[in-house]
Length: 539
Image 1: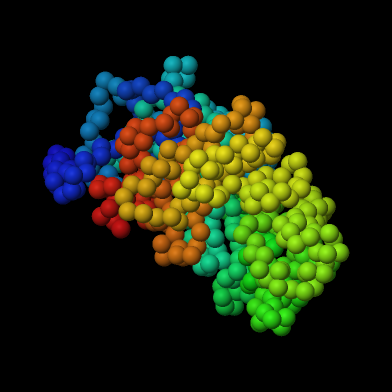
Image 2: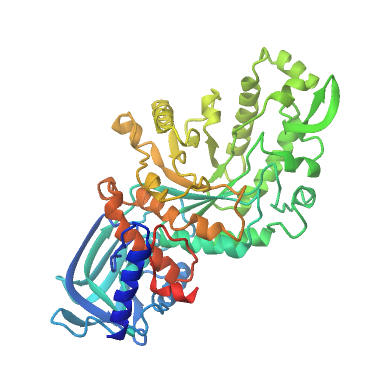
């Protein structure tokens, strides 16, 4: 009873001190992102940490065994309510103890997650056809991983036990591409923060980690083929990601059903490449003399394409995903214009002073190069490649990012890209590094990648979307709280049915529970409004 009195008093205090913001009463045992179909009854079972276990009844593999161990620890570690008196003491709705949940993987495990992976799953807890029991069933290991996360969220701490309502879930993602981008070039991010972010991505059912590894500011990727790139281009000798580090990240993500999509943005955004690869960048001129600065990659030199072929062969061997992000955005033509060798090359090629044609020449050769690597990769490019009329292959994925405060403009871009028959990924409305006071999460929840004037065939070309966290003002000190749970909002928009995500007010109590859940699992995520979580006292 004492805990109930304290909770009521604390709730009153929050209401009185919240400056006009009403106290948000969180849901209990609601899954985030919201499943496509979930039915729950008031009847419930109890899970006892000392006796609960998962039982594998189908296929088995290393990914599954690691996941069962990981989720057992995550589910049963909560201390928020450990001393709280149970409020559900053996009522008439009590249906017994849930000591075993059967995990039925119906097909052999795949080694790596991929664009077309099957993530659907089914959960039954004390269902009419399987009373007093629990099962998680999926065709693929990726579906099992998503099902385990959902099951873990059904458990409600209750004294020294956990209660779980009688539940049936049938679930699958709305979009196959649900990405999150980290920038490790403007600020180096420690590996432990990348790992923590992958844990949080798995909790929110993101399935693509877009790793913007290098840029103008630094080149932290350590290449075995071209070691001078990081030796000369990183912030310092310790601000690098070694080949072993890359392997560890790819493996950590694989075990969570997350693809790792590397980005090596060219021909611009490459200033940090230059010191380690002399001759790669264009020499800039003023008054017909070198001015000591360098511009984008020099597209006139054949040896630069040989360099890129060797570098990207190594990159695509280390990263096991079929796709690589080739960038192609924000190319500054001023340096090219100042360079007489570039001017002569353009005359020879009949480009007649149109530097977008020179960019197109470069991108076309790069794409051809990538498509003929030993791994025969597919690729994404930023939208400028499409906007500038570059002749790209039919299977190119166009990544839309511009005009993030002008939805009417990026919606028109979606229309144009899909009219041209290209697949696309949207980020324009999900730049999480653009922070503002107040509840900015609502604008993320109101964005929909298929909300544009297009045919149904066009909308099927929208593969999904991606939340971006650019690193100008983000490092290991503020990555997690600035990102989460704001990124959770994007995750639900990309996983759940459009019909289930059309109300920010309906999302509020569920998002409050989810924020506390993330906090309770040890992640220092920021609040979204005046509120409290029971694990606040442990921060």
